[in-house]
Image 1 (spheres, rainbow over the protein chains, first blue to last red):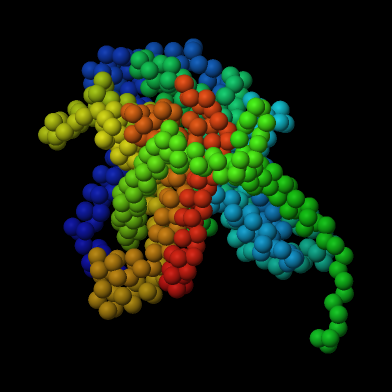
Image 2 (image 1 turned 45 degrees about the vertical axis):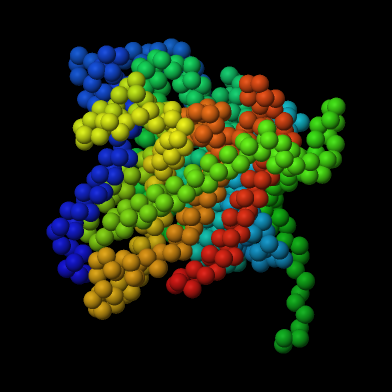
Length: 279
Length: 309
């Protein structure tokens, strides 16, 4: 290690830049959460100070919880995200196993076909997807969203998982075969547990865009029954343009679950990105 | 020995079983609708019937001033949106990654986690939070600019035609900077220690080490980030829709292809939605994205490959 990379001014400079950017990245988030706990006077009088006993007020939260059906939207988002995630992981792992384990005619072609979806966004097919959903009577159902998100998540999942499945030892699988295990048992009992860490990475990658998506809920499932949290928040924010307490509280309620999940899984996510799976 | 014919293996059903669900869902929900959309762009609804009209929709899109003005405006805005991302997001991302990967940096994990936070938030949150911050009503932005003595420069950026698109692009950059940062960080970590040591033996350290040794080695990652940014930008919709609505105001100055597609497809206010014109716009977006991906695959990646280990 050279002296130059350890010199003091250089280190201070690096910290200064990183710290500045960290402040830029976190400032809006902290500002919104901080002000959501204040009274109207506090929000406008001193937006940059944390809530004091004098300005502390939960009026925003009571308005939001009283007005919007957020718990219900939250459930919808949860159902859609968890179900899509389950199918992406299951189907993705199965396809990845088939592609990485067996040699058969059309293997490479199949891989390329599935990889097409990584580059071409599913959104461009929206016009025909809507027609398909109308024809099959799935408009305004969560099933429509689950199907779309499963299709959307599969290409990347297959791509990443097959990279990892190639690393699973052949001896282990062959030992299983000699012991008379069926191919299905080998997949579910031997291979799946071994690739669990990479499954977690894929799960995080798949989950964020699904949870945050606005386009498909807006087009395929805008009814009151099937609104997701993202769409619900969007409409709610549109209605309460002048009620700043309610807006800030709604924003904070939308931020916090994602933020908590992120803090729990950030290690996993960052390890996944930096392990080179997505190079 | 070699002349022996291989025993004919029984058909391996399990391969089909493993592949079928993924293939089925992917083909039915993604590939077929994509093809269907391309096909729809060649039809037009005349008296409740879909009639094949060849390239008429595209003729309308480019020939009819009602459409073509909006289309070229959206495309131009989209290109500007992309240029800002390439000029701001990627250099800052590379710089942050380079700083993060410097050896023995304390709190690296903290910085990494914190800078990635905006990336996980939804567009709705990001769009609204920034709308509030930049709003002259709340006064957070003017107040902050006052602290550094720049208050006179403040204008309601999102409300002015000449600034709105740039402001929104920068908000989007703020949100997505974590992605180039992480991917470049990963690439920098994977540079073999020997290469760095060899450079140091030759007396190449610090900045010149970054420019001469590391940067050429991470070029493939920069290529990937560029193409990801390209696809993401020409497919963007949510941020503009949340911050400025489907009309992409003020006066269409923030209209990009995604919002244009939405308005054409669903209609907005006085305009009636037209799935066929929507499909035509989606086809144009498809061709643009496909073009970008092809340029990347055939021109950029083949030239960069020789740098890989």
